[in-house]
Each structure stands twice: as structure tokens, then as C-alpha cells.
Image (cartoon, rainbow, N blue to C red; front, side, top):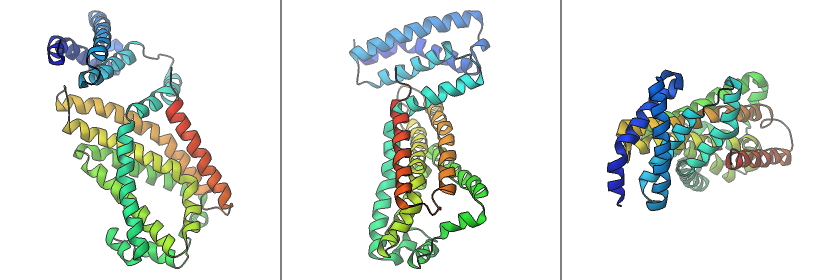
Amino acid sequence: MHADDFIQRKRSSWERLSALLDRAGVGIAALSADEIQELGRLYRQASSDLAAARRDFPRHQVSAYLNGLVARGHGAIYHDTSGRAGRTGTFLRSTFPRTFRDTWAFTLAAFLMFLLPAIAAFIITYRDPTLGSVLVPGAEQVITNVEAGNEWWQRINEEGRSLSSAEIMTNNIGVAFRAFAGGVTFGVYTLVVLATNGLMLGVVAGAAQRFSFAANLWGFVAAHGVIELSVIFIAGGAGLQLGWALLHPGLLTRRAALVLAARRAVLLLLGCVPLLVIAGVIEAFISPSALPLAVKLLVAFGSGIALYTYLLGAGRS
């Protein structure tokens, strides 16, 4: 059997299952008894279809579609009823890291869209610091501070660390949200946010290297940078998923594809919030402190190992 024939035969039952799952999104109690029975039957049928698709059409997009549909069905039917705390625990232990692994390609794309402009800006600014303000309008003051050896981040201590921590968290969450929300512009604004932040880091790093200020800069950035940048990449990847769903809906309508992508993207964004809180606390209390550079690098290394051990290992069967 060809994949197109398989899809044509099964499409109506898949669409019906998807419609029931949309209604059950607020709770399976929203369905009637007959609909709950139908949901169970269609879920079992979709599970069987998924097994057949993986066997006969492993590289076809229908396999990915059915995998997502069956995952939604499983979540609705075997929904955790242990209360808010239990659901939050399940989300942190399993749902968020699994969603990250399922969508890692988009996170990688976001990382590259940040990294490549950062490398280009570093090279250009290192060779000629005056070009930094051309790449990032308004960067003149930062470059001037770098050239003068002014560690402007020490003002965090002067303004009060608790207040600064809250402001930093708010700012970081704002950047992550803009990277995510930009997906509805077919991913264009998400790319702009990623590239702009990459250019800014590259300009500052290039100027710091040129004026022998690199140790000071990285002594501030290193401790919180691993978590903070990782979150930006995850949020950017979530935004790119929205853009990709709009551009390439596959078997679904563009609206349905966007809804499915948005569900995954929102899970990623919710998982990013506690990570940004951690990064904000580190940036306010450890990064601007007088602790030795070795200690800050140890914090960076330890936080990176802990984060990616969690993202890559948690929630596995």
C-alpha cells in the first residue's frame, strides 16, 4: 500500500480523533459518555495506525503526524489527576525535557541563528571597534565603557541585588517571550531577535578582546550565561516551530498545524520560566561579585552539566 492510499483511508478517523482531543483539552469530562467511548476506540485505532506507519512508511511525514496525535490521545486519556502539584511535578520531570528532545532541531536552528551573527560581529569589531555601532546602533556607549575598562555591571551591587534580580528576570523573560511570539510572523521576527542578540554579544566580546578586557567581561557573563543563552535558544526554537507550521503544515490545515506547534511551543516556554529565574538569581548575586574567576567558571560548568543532564535524560522510560 502506498502512503497516500493509507492516508486517504484513515484520514477521517484521525480528524475525528483530533476534534475530540481539542474538546477534551479542558478536561475529558467535557465529553459525553458516547464520545469518551469513541475517543478510546479512535485512540487505539490511531495507535495501530502509528505502528503500521512506522513499519511501512518510517520516513514519511504521516509517521510524525500520527506520533503527535497518539501522544495527545495518551495525555488526554491517561491524564494525571493527582492535583496541581502532581501535574507540575510531572511537567518538570517528564513533559518539558521530552518536548525539548522532540523539538531539538528547532533549538539547534535557533542556536545557529544566534551564533553565526555573533561570530561575524566579534571578528568585525575586533578588527575595527568603530564598526560595532554600525552593526548594533547604540553600542557606542558599551564599547566606550569596554575601552575605558569600566565594569558597568558593578552597578547591580549598588542598586541592591534583590531588586536587580527581579529586573533581570523580567528582562530575560521578555527576550524569551519575544523570540517565541515572533513565530507568528512566519519566524521572521524570531530570527531578528536571535540575530540581534547574537550581534550584540559579538560586538561586546570583540571590543573586549581588542582592548584586553575579555577576562573582565567573561568573569561577569560566564556564571549565568550558560543557562540564560540556552533558554533564549529554546524559546527561539519554539518560535521557529510556529513559523515552520505556518510555512509547512504537512497533512494538516495551516490553522491546525499552528495549533499543534503552539501546544509544544508553549510547553517549552513554560519550562523556560524557572530556568530564567535561576539565571536571574545567578546574574544578580554571583556574576557581579568579587568571587574569583575560577569559581564563576565552576558555576558555569556545573550549571551547564546539570541543565543538559536534565534536558537530555529526564523523563526517559
